Image 1 (tube, helix red, strand yellow):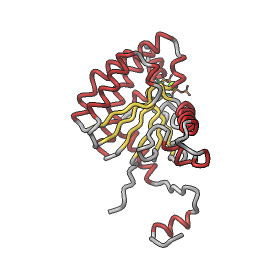
Image 2 (cartoon, helix red, strand yellow):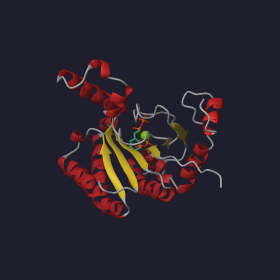
Image 3 (spheres, protein in one colour):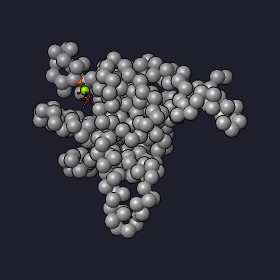
Image 4 (cartoon, protein in one colour):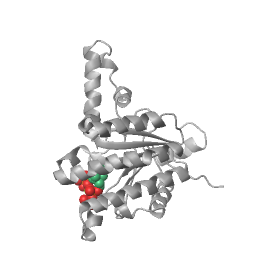
Amino acid sequence: MPDIVIPRHLAVIMDGNGRWAERRHRPRMIGHRAGARAVNVCIDFCLQRGIEVLTLFAFSSENWKRPEEEVGALMKLFLNALEREVDELHRRGVRVRFIGERERFAAPIRERMAAAEALTAGNARLTLAIAASYGGRQDIAAAARALAAEVAGGRLRVEDIDEAAVDARTALADLPAPDLFIRTGGDHRISNFLLWQLAYTELWFTETLWPDLDASVLQQALDDFAGRERRFGLTGAQLAQNREGTPA
Ligand code: IPE
Ligand code: IPE
Ligand code: MG
């Protein structure tokens, strides 16, 4: 049987909700609601394929600057989703966690985030990381701040600050780095998602708007991923040698 290369960690920018609604001459919020359904499609797919980690970009640090009405409606949707979906996720063996500046959310949302994490902490089938009020630059800045505080407190020496030390203080440090990144909605950019963590991630983009997501789109991404050669800076010949078990 041929090897099927399944990404361990899938990271997704769920983009295109607003345009999906605008094309239907409906308010943007209708698109966000439809987008919430697509989240379940994506989680189901990961569970079926045995993907270990799914990171979803739900709300960026910059999205706070959207019109107040849209931000308010998104917060309501977020709160409803937390109330509605967490028990089912728990039943299905999903471990939920949140990354981002959670202090920016109102208390009821923060409380439900903490409760969801506590309830599902022991699950191991799929880790679902939800990036909410998240920014890649903010993540790296927080790591730098943590390192500086440790140096100032005498717990860390400047010369011990290396890539591993920074990595350990960024979000998702305990998980494998994303293997595959998917962005829906047709734009080819990272939009301040996991900047540090995506260093060697394979990138895949689709015109499909997030609310139109189905398993066949995700399968296309996986098929494309399976055909790629990830070289991590080495040569193709070195990789072939490594596969044969001989040292490069
Ligand atoms: C992504 O869809 C959801 C969030 C950023 C919260 P958008 O709302 O960005 O949809 P488009 O890109 O405007 O179509
Ligand atoms: C990225 O989408 C953030 C999320 C999907 C949560 P945006 O719609 O905010 O990104 P830009 O503005 O098109 O770069
Ligand atoms: Mg967008």
